[in-house]
Length: 46
Image (cartoon, rainbow, N blue to C red):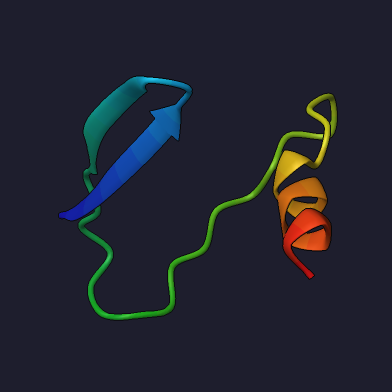
């Protein structure tokens, strides 16, 4: 099981990711209807 911490403003959410697929390189995929906010954050810090 993996853990995920998300901060949004002054709120923090702790959650778990239930995974039983064995060892591997897990990745997250963004839905096509959702804007790529992470890329905007990375550009702002560069």
